[in-house]
Structures are given as structure tokens and as C-alpha cells.
Image (cartoon, rainbow over all chains, first blue to last red; front, side, top):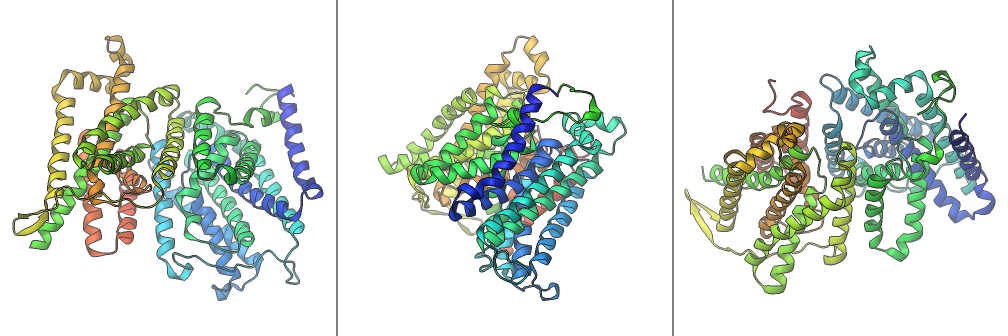
Length: 327
Length: 284
């Protein structure tokens, strides 16, 4: 293992350990905030998986996040009586429905003469806009105002979970999502995805079914984003049309780019870092915050394509690709 | 009959305004392979230049003249500050210009507030067109947009400069080795494309509600026009604007505007899905 890879591994482990120990030093209010950031982190992971690993630049990732959030809200508010109102059902639907939508969208976009690059970005951007408009006009899901009073995560006996318990629930969910993405990225499948990212045509000519791989990873990513959306709703207690819209889609893009698109942990920590900074700065910078964020984003894209954490957190390539191979 | 004529006029009006924005996008993308996500915000700045100038001096026409000049300078600045550094990283140009659009939009909010501004109509009379009372200013927009579009076509297909630009689009390396300064060409194109967007924003300001979100409202239809019509082709831009502008106006006449938008987007996505090279390149 090279030195930088050892550093990456230790920093990654350290980051997770730090998150695990956070309740020892932070009060309830800050733990609540951190829980939200970690939820956004899961969302960022979903984008990091398709963008960083497979090179699919999706401008509509919030579609899946929002559908997940709405699913959770609809189920737990009892709006879908035949499904009951259990939170587990809600979470299951928050994973399944976005997954199916992602599979459908992926099939539309990648089957046939596959869309890529600019076409893909614009089609997904438009899809997000269409979803937001549709959500505003659909009265069943609350129309313009959205749905309110979504119950918080609760224990099996019906009591709401304590702040710390919610934090650990979300944190473990994030860890599992991370490990799943990492496993996909480091498996032979992930190597094919990296091949698609680097040279799609060559991968195609090596005999891999590029479309199927893309649709698969897009579907998994949609499920993850929906999962994050489901968790999000229980913390905020409401859902509204901007959750499926393109503003949130671009925000997650910024988190991932700033954190480091090519490294999953970078994407995850990017979400945490940007949201935490936003929270700390938005009071003092007020309306200049968005300008600062945009400028930071431009700067990172132009000067540091690896993102702030990308280099630091890079792990060694999988062992089967050769000992200490160079990336 | 009168309703049909009015609808046709509205369609032509929107299509031509869209064409101005789209032309800038197509030229920049065709020549530089840069997707300018901040193009909608250039449109936005154009509109706000008119707001600021007509507020300060009371003259709408001065604002209309200044807007493309301001935007050409903005275009040069953006090219110099950002674009030239990320020339060969296609995806990064999308991201960086997207960041730029956030900065500009929020900058406008800071300077002018988030609310809608209104610009008084400089030609408040109506003209009789085949028995329909149609606002004179809208006719003026159509005439101006058509003239500018024609001028752009003339520039591209009838002048030496246009020939050089088309040469760079077709084969950059070859054009460069024939002694064409491709970098200067890029800068000029970016400035002209930006100026076109700014001019469109300025000219549309009196008939739209001028607010910080109006750029996005125009960016997406114009992107769709580019993709629907066919990337890399000026004729494609015309066809695309016609399809998107026409569909938007015609659907809006029958159903609510939000539903019309959904329908237009879906229509565009289906076209893009099945004709990835656009209507122009469909049979290739």
C-alpha cells in the first residue's frame, strides 16, 4: 500500500470514528443538525456513485430524493391506506419507488442511442423541472404547500426516538450505504464502471454491456437517494415540491464536486462540510452566502477538479488489480 | 380566425425571442464545445441593465443599446476568468458555468432585491394586423429578432469571418495550422453569443416580469431548442426554437401554463431520446 493510500484509509476510518463519537462532545441541538447533514451525505453518496464511479453527470438527482421523501410522508401519514402507516413500510417504499423511477429513466436514457454528456445533463435537468412543476400541481401529494406533520422516527413501541438514537440510526444507515457503494466501486463491476467513465467506447468494444451497467448503477443510485429522502422527511416533518426540483439537484452536485467527486468519502464529507459551513456562515454572510458558495464551486471546478478531500481520502485500488497499483 | 392570427403572432414572437438566446448557445457550443449554463443569466443581466438604465435616465432605448455592450464585456471577462482554463474539460465547463449562474443570480438578488421589477412598455400602442389588435412593441421585437437572426446568418455564411469561424468549428487543428487565430475567434464568439443573450433579455424586459428567476425560465427552453433542433447547426437552432416556442405558445393557449410546460418538456425529451442528433441530424 502506498503512503497516500494508507493516509486515505486512516483518514476514512478516522472520519467514521469521529462521527460515531460526536454525541460525546456535541449537545442535542448540534446532533440534530449533524443528523441532517449525514442524511444529505447519503444523498451525496448516491450522486458520487454514478458521477464519480461511472461518469454519469445527473442534474436531476433530487427527483429520486424527493420521491423518497414523498413516499415516506404519504405512507406514514396514512395517505396510502392499503400499505398501512408503518415507518418500515415507508422506508421500503422510499427505496423501491425511486428505484423503479430511476430504472425507468435509466432505461429511457441509456437504451438505444445512449444519451451522455451534455444531453444527459440537460435531459435530467428538465426531468427535475418537470417533476417539480408536477408536484406543485398534484393535490393528492399536497400541491404547492406539500405535506405536513410527518411523524419523526420512532421506536417499535411508538415513542419518538431520542436525538442520539435518531443520529445513530441515520449514521449506521449512512455507513451501510457507504459500504455498499464502496463495495460496488471496488468490485469487478465497479472496474467496468470506471472503464465506462474513462472510455465508454473502448469498454463497449471489450465486450461489456455498457447500457446494462449504466442502468444498473443508476437504479442503485436512485434507491440510495430515495432512502436519504425518506430519512430526511422524518427529521424535517414536511415535504414540499422543491425537494424534487432542480435547485436541490444542483446543490448536491456542488457538495459532491467540492468534496471530491472521484472518492465516495469525499462526496459524503463534501455534503457535511458545505452544509455545516452554510449553517455557520449564512447568519453572518446572509445573502452573500450563495455568492460565496457559487464562487467556491467555480474555484474548485477550475483549480481543484479532485475536490477538497479527493486527494486526501483516495483509497488504494482493489488488490486484484495488482499490488499497490498506480492510479 | 382572429384568435388563430393572434396565436400565430404570439408563436412567432416567442420563437424569435427564443431564437436569439438559442443562437448564442449554439454558436458558443459549436465553436468552443462549451455548454454555457450561465447563458440564462446573461439574458437576466440584459433585462436588469434595462431596468437600471431606464430607472436612472428614464430612457428605455438607451438601456436596449447598452445591454448587448455590457454583456459582450461580461462575456469577455467570463471567458478570460473561467472558460479558458477549463477548455478541454467538457464536463467541468458545465459545472463552472453553472456555478457562475448561481453567483450572477444571487448577485442580482443582492443588487435589485428578489422581487419582480417592471419596465414600462416603450411602445404602448396597438397595431391592426389582419383585423387583430396586436401590441406594437411585440411587432417591434419580432422585426428586431428576425433582423438580428438574419444578420447572424449573414455573418456566418456570407462573410470571410464567418467562413473562418465555420472552419474552426469543422476542424480546429486544421484551421489553426492555416493561420487562423482560434483563441481570438473563441473570445469573439463568446462575447457575441453573450451579447445576443443580453440583447434578448433587454428586448423582452418590458413584456416579462423581470425577476431573478427569469434566466432559468429561458435557459431551459433554449437548451431544449438546441438539442431538439440539432447541436452545431444554425438551421437546427431555428427549427428547435420553432418547435419549442410554437409548442409552448400553442399548448398555453389551451391549458394552464404549468401543464403546457410539462407537455413541452416531455415532448422535447421524447424528441431528444429518439433523435439524439436533433431533427436536423435525424437521418444521418
